[in-house]
Image 1 (cartoon, rainbow, N blue to C red):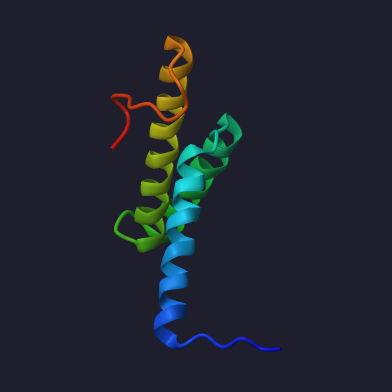
Image 2 (spheres, one colour; image 1 turned 90 degrees about the horizontal axis):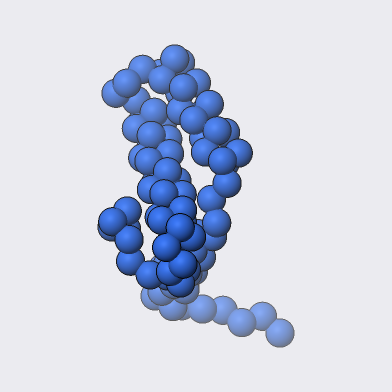
Length: 91
């Protein structure tokens, strides 16, 4: 049986899934390797497309977010705080 959603239901479902994925990623541990890989891709985007390119700007924003999450994780770990607690690095 094929279950068809009307477009409004499908749009809601996609927004819900995007929100759930963002929450999952926000709580997922960041590794130094992830940061290094993103850093390389940002450098490559800068060298190929320049500072004002969308590739560089998006990559830089993602790298910034990874670093902030990493610093928040280390802050919590150093102070024995629970995983979801607020830190100076949380937005």
